[in-house]
Amino acid sequence: MVQNDQNHDAFMLANHASNELFQPKSHKEVDFPIQNVVINWDRLMAKRGQVLLSSEEMPAYLLKPEVLRLLEQEDDLSYRLIMDLMWSTGARISEVLALTPERFVFDRYDHMVILDTLKKRGRPKRKALQRSPKRFVPICEPELINRISTYLYMNKFKKGERLFTMARQSVNRHIKAAVSKAGGAPFPISAHTFRHSFAIHLLLHGRPLKYVSQLLGHSSVKSTEVYTNVLTVDGSHFMEGVPFH
Image (cartoon, rainbow, N blue to C red; front, side, top):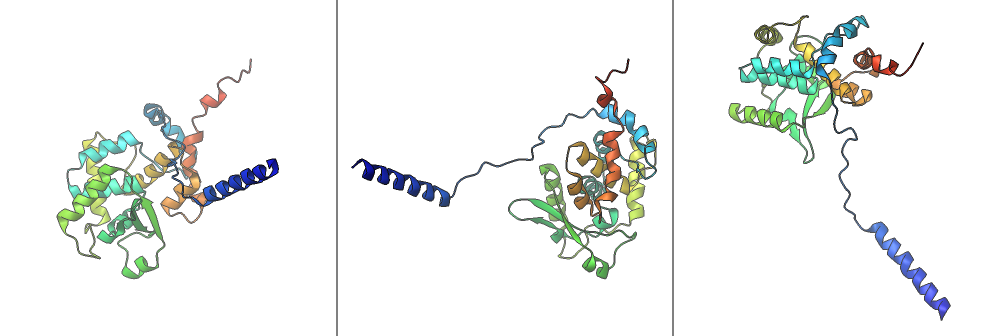
């Protein structure tokens, strides 16, 4: 009788485990492990000169407070959105000027913009757009999502219609004017500066180099490695606590 009870218990336990295995479970959402980063922007601005001298290939870049200051200077909604997109997605100016309304998508999980990887200057031709690799860049900030949605709704764009008809020279003129209104800058700033600033901003927040490289559309992660100079040039904290005398 004892043996039968044990067999019964073992069967029930195995059956219960088997049922659990195939039962759908609600999984807790897992966010990216780095949630909050405290950045001393003033220190990074002070150290930027050292970063730019650390490598001949290191491009000039802006930090978040500086970018936001520039964005505040632009009153034209079209040019403001162009600058917002370059800063928030790392897109080249040619890639932004090639955008059409259907390039903004929502797949029930993420809002994204589909960018053509266009490295040549000038407005791309239709064949170049068809051949170019596509990359999907998430847009997570509600404010920017709302700005994009409002822009698309207000302008009633048709499918395949370009959102922005201006030339890159016009965009750079607006950026130059914004820099002047903001009080000037220690180095020339162009549309491409926003792309470099995007890469730096992600690395400062601990995002993987490989992922940053993919978002930028680099064919090799080696092209992205130059941005890591911003993480290593300020090494005094590594030396603290190492006595020599």
